[in-house]
Length: 77
Image (cartoon, rainbow, N blue to C red; front, side):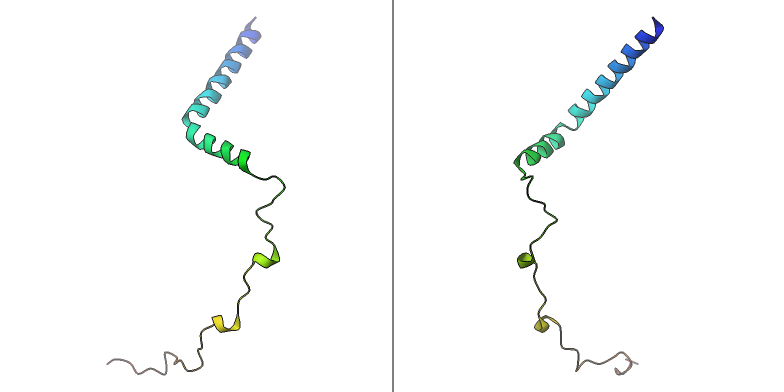
């Protein structure tokens, strides 16, 4: 009878722990479950179509041809 009682106690402790976690994290779990319910399982957010990816243009780069290096600038002495 000792093994059965031990199994019941362990099962009760696991059920209590599960309930405590559910109650403690209820707001977070509710938001997560709602977002899962609203999500589209056919769409993978990691798969971005090529048309949505912005391509860098050549004019996005700054013109550094006329800039000076640190050794070209006279020190403030």
